[in-house]
Length: 165
Image (cartoon, rainbow, N blue to C red; front, side, top):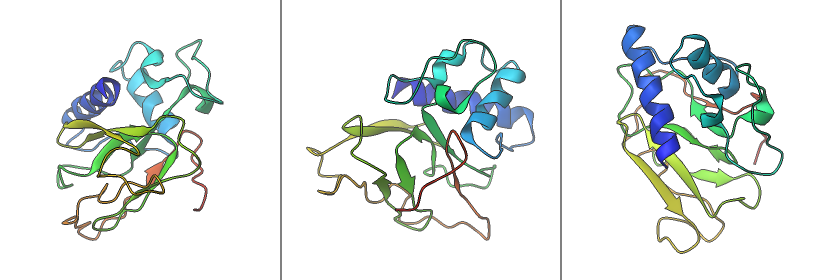
């Protein structure tokens, strides 16, 4: 949870320096690389969490296998503060009012760490939490009053590919 909060805070600093626009790219790896290249992050280990298929970064050049976080693309100053900005990979997010975060497989961790654009962070724990469905999905991951205001939001995964589920 602290890591998602720290990453989101750096993204907020980036947005402050770029007219309210958050870093964007084709993948979360590309977004996070912009934070390293811009000097906002000096230790790429912040993007790593021990999980299957992931390896610690050994240089300042990130690879998808070094990144364990997904991001929401295209947020800006007009985006809802309650939109999830940075969250642990392994879920597919539906960007509709009340959209769920659906596990893509049996979650490696029994929950998901998330930080919202408001910089509020939480860790939703499954299956003991009443906020989690029996299938492991997290309802209302995207707030019920979410209004994209004509913008298209999408999830950026480390390799840029989000499997269907």
